[in-house]
Length: 83
Image (cartoon, rainbow, N blue to C red; front, side, top):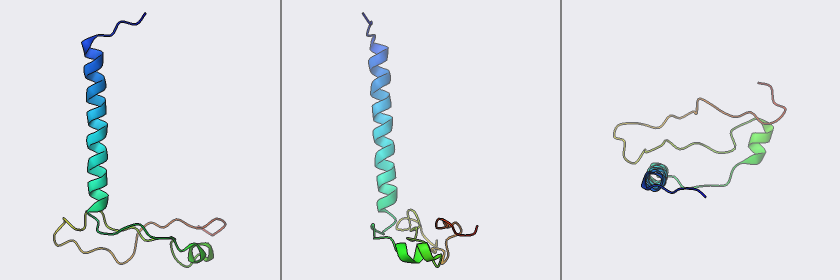
């Protein structure tokens, strides 16, 4: 029979609180970007013309003086496209 010590309960509580806090921070970071979700442009991505969807700058609404980049530095190539 397992022995439950108060330390075990405290450790579990700390883990749940840290996970909850991290979730709230990440949701706030995403929400502060000022851009909602949108449908990807699959046709342009498969043809290799553009990315399926643009990545919004994180926390753009709370950063001052930071202009978003016009071009994303990293793009994912469609299947079968040259590197």
